[in-house]
Every structure is written in structure tokens, then in C-alpha cells.
Amino acid sequence: MRVFLSLLALAVIALGIAMTLTDIPFGKPKADIATHYVENGREDTGAVNIITSVVLGYRGFDTLGEVAVLFVAAMGLGAVLATGTRTPKANGWEPASLVLYTGCRFLFPLIVLFGAYIFIHGHLTPGGGFQGGAIIASAFLLTYLGCRGRRVHEAWSSAVESLGGLTFVVLGLAGLTAAGHYFLSAFLPAGTLGQLFSGGIIPLIYIAIGLKVGSELAGVIDRLVEESQ
Amino acid sequence: MSFLEDYAYYFGAFGLIFIGLLIMLVKHNLIKVIIGLSILDTGVNLFLISVGYISNGTAPIFCRDDMDPSRMVDPVPQALVLTAIVIGVAVLAMALAIAVRLYQRYGTLDLRKIKELRW
Image 1 (cartoon, chains in turn cyan, yellow):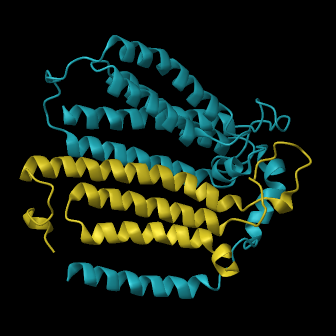
Image 2: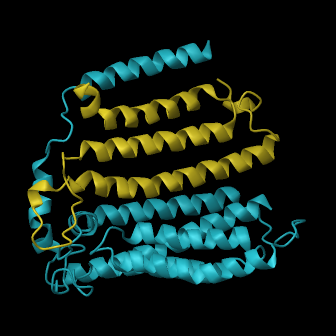
Image 3: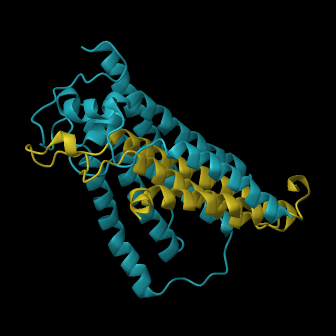
């Protein structure tokens, strides 16, 4: 009965979607705003990657809100999982073998380096702060899976996270007082297109976002792993 | 057949969305419901990306100066999905944390046995 009702509801939804989608052509340009961004994005923001110029140039304020959502989710996770006792219990798992342990310790700095490369080059190549942060968090996940006993130093994690968020807001406020007179205005020189040191405040914000997202997701992994022990 | 070829991405995206919705509606195990939520999330992201696709378009990144702006795909859905993926991870982590707490409280993940969640 439940399956039947569910299928019926899905069929109704599918009918509505099909009626809507037949009016939307596939593979054709649809919005003028896209053309505007693609044609003027380089001059307006100084970023070669147009997606980055949309995320941080045209829509920087929305990205600040999105970073706040991620922060609230990580904080809510901590609140839901808070047990009061922070003393790590001794678990009965046997330690990893020497090969696994050494391999994880060898790979950890390389993965962090790759993540840093991704978010430093966010305005030039595919990638950016969120992707690079996720890669850095994956390095911490590898440590948790491969080298049991090693863990994130909580004070450092919180400090890096706070510093990342603070840098974003301070750069936005600096734009408020500097030339542009609005929040997150590009007050640094745009530089030469396609160079590493270009794009004004965009690389700085992406570095802040990368550190923040990386430490935040590492904290999420830390809490979930701690809970499962 | 050209209809199917033109709308292949839409069919794939909504296939994922409906699979995720069906899992969420039918399954009784909370972990499976969360997996359904994740599949639904992936389908929505794929749909948004495919709405912004332009036939034979390239990624909106000027690797060289002589690239043609009119052949680039819409960057706005890609920027939206970039943020939607991160929000999806946050929602997933939050849901898993609540599942952990529910298991500690009731000793089961079966939604039929958890009193407050029965429907």
C-alpha cells in the first residue's frame, strides 16, 4: 500500500515536471545574464575562470551567506553530538600495520599540498576554495582511517576556521571603506589576466574559504569518528 | 530517437531524483533514507548543470585569450551547484549525526520501531 501510494505520488510529480520541461529547450542559450557574465567577467573581476568571477565577484555576498550555512551546520553537528564527556575512550581496535601507517603519513602532506594548489589557483583553473577545502578534509579522513590515534588538534582547527571566516568578512568590510563603497568591492588592483597574482581580492578570499572549509569538514569528520568509537 | 538524445541529461537527472525520492518514501532503515536523500541531491545538481548546457559548448574558463565567449556554457548554474554541493555535504553530516543520536536513544534505525517517527 505504502509503495503503491509512493509510486502514485511520484507519477503525479513526474507528469508535472514533464509538462514543464517540454517548454525548456536543451542545449540552447537561455539567459542573457550568462552572456553578460561570460563576455564581461574578465574585465569586471579580473578572474579568468568565469565561475569564480560569478561566485566571488558578482555574487560574493551570497557566498558569504553560504559559508555561514556551512558553519551553522558544523556547529549544529557539534551540538547534536555533544555528550559532555570529551575524554577519548580506549577502543578495542588493533592499530594499523606499519605499511598502512607510513603510507598515510607519506600521503597526508601531498594531499594537503594538492588541496592548497586547487584553492590558490581558483581564479585560473577549474577549482576553488570549496573544492580545495574538501580535498584537504579528505587528507584528514585518510589519517582517521589509516593512522588511528592521530587526530586533529581541536584548538588549531577552530583557530584556522575562525581566521578564514574573519578574513572573508574583513576583506568585505575593507571594500566598504575603500574605493568601491560597497561590501566586498574589488579594491585591490586586478593585475594581468591569467597570472597567479591577479584578480584583486578573489584569490585572498578563496584561500580564506579553502582553509575554513577544510578545517570545518575535518572537524565534522573528527566528531563523527569520535562518536563511532 | 532524437527526442531521447536531446533530453538524455534530463532523463538521467530526473531518474536519479525519482530513485532518491522513492527510496526516501519506501525504505524503513534510516541510513537508507539518508542515502536516498544523497541520491536526490546528486540528481538535482545534475539537472541544474544540464539546464545551463549549451550544445558543443566549452567550460567558461578562458585558458587562452582567443577563446570564443559565445560557445561557453552558462556559468550561473555551475556556480549555484558549486555551493549546493557544499550545502548537501552539510545536510548529510547533520542527518547522520541525528541518526547516530536516534540509534543511541532507541537502539534501532528501523523507522517503524521509533515511536515519534511513525507514519
